[in-house]
Length: 112
Length: 496
Image (tube, rainbow over all chains, first blue to last red; front, side):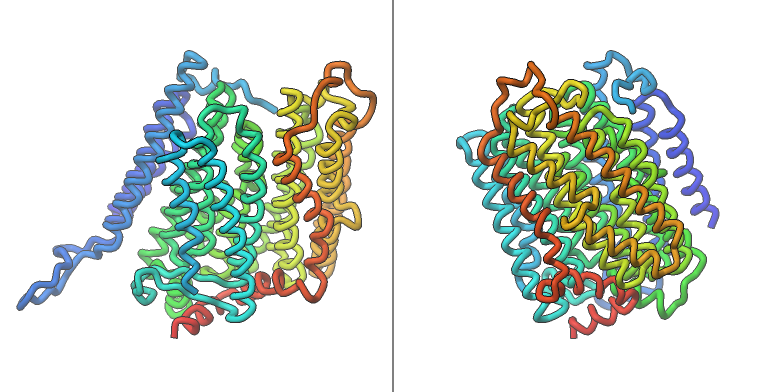
């Protein structure tokens, strides 16, 4: 149970980072932390104590195995996260070229 | 039966081919993108007849039987959304042929556009919760890139805000899916619903519902979560604004919300009450913020928030009549809002400005744009006999029948406000004496006019969807929502 709560705390740290930080690079790092917290949680959901990989071989009795599905899903989710991070970092670099700053409070030409 | 995966394969395939060959062969991207969206539109029309014949069609991906394999489900709501999305996207690609000449690298635009379409169609047809998340991310990432397509300072800023908000929303949705998986040990939508009915709804389901509400609410731009929309939608090129406001927020937000809450988790009175409150707040806030705007596209973006409020309000009421009104309004809104954004694109194409204070008297110079936008504006403000009037009338009647008197009153007042700010748009932009500066502007090219005229005609005649012969189109979609948790029995029944 405590591992789940630690995951949730990690998630909240990421959320705090996105909401409170002014530097856009730090915001992107915050998004990364959120993503890792969820991936970690998802893998932990499938974890069993002393479990082993669910590979069925001849004359072996498997009593306790981990759930492989969350691991497959987390792989997908990591790839998606990579794509999003790459895109946002590219946008951040272009933003720096245009505004000359990484400070989100100074990047406000849109309003209303 | 076999045609369901093609809703994802066709746009993915065209995106691939366009990115590969678009630069080398002239006009290749235009032709292929238009053929792709046209074939998708025809397929979606064919899906209506399939639904009329079979009620529900389930396609097993790779031959694996659900819940072990992934399935795709075609039912009334799916075919309703497919027709809406693919109709608008076809007309938007026709419009883009001329409009996107303003930008360099047109083939990149079409690549991203088709990827976004693949994501949206995937969300609509899939019957698997994690699959829904993956398609949602495909559509969302393509739309972040499309908002920044002009790569000017404002566009990048809007895209950054949108990407941060969108990623947080996706994280909420993924967390909700992880929690739901840990509780039910399955990802198939129908199977989750089955397990929930056997196992009972623990306290964790309430937490999952809140996470889903926040995630899809952010995607649909309901009012406490709306801050990204008025920046992102106006910054995109006009065809993309039309797609984003017209169908994107409805697919990622409203459709996914409906599917999850009505068919998987089961709607409770608390959730409906929250939906009604969110809907009413969105209606009011969107309308008041829209009046003060001087930028045309920004005004339309706030108007989208207000109209999404109507749809969510109707879904929250939850009576059969209200659901009919809500879905009908969803269809109408996707038509007239894309029309209005295309009009704003035409104004920008001819005059290079979107500021209402600098426009004026354009009706003599841009007659097609002027009159089609007048039709769109009258329809969205709910003036009879246009389609928007009927959908709003049904929603208000349903609200009164269900006892939401105050909310119904607010809905009428917001409708009047809507008329006010669209009249402001018409007066400043099209009526009155022609402004000296615009005496030389020319009407926009043929393809742009064509798609605006078609959308305007649909705006006028969409009311015929309510006559008994054509009513099954809407009725089938409503019946899926009314099924509620009976969705699982229908899906498993079709598998046998």
